[in-house]
Amino acid sequence: MPRKLIILTVFGAAMGWWEGVVVVYIRKILQLSIPDLTRMVMGQVPRDLLSIEMTREAATIIMLVAVALMLEKNWWRRLAVFLWVFAVWDLVYYAALKVLIGWPPSFATIDCLFLIPAPWIAPVWVPVLTMAGFLVFSGWLFLKIKE
Image (cartoon, rainbow, N blue to C red; front, top):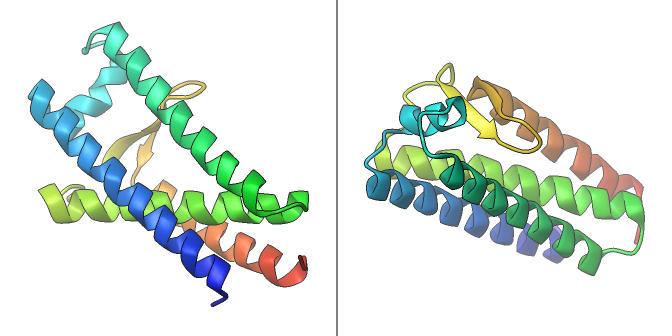
């Protein structure tokens, strides 16, 4: 694995762990279970908190885009960086939740995946499979599109 890809993987993993920790803190502070956090999008949690959560999600995407723009000049390679780090981040996020609080209990567990532009609700296997696809596609882009 090239040095740049190792660094991107470490960065994505750190972001994923950090996000998992943040979700555990949010859950603890608000005294919510993870399913309650999913219900947040259904109006059972104050709208202002939902808006704040959306800004956190937007900031995360901005960080991923910034890394891609800083590291690559070619748009296809920028896409590869973005998808690679996004995938590692999301997979480590779910792993962190599993390690820290034992959630999700299964890949069939329903989760709110994202709030932007509208709530995305699906079983956990959906993002896991999607992120695996992102890793394969971005790896292929790295191999095909030279710097």
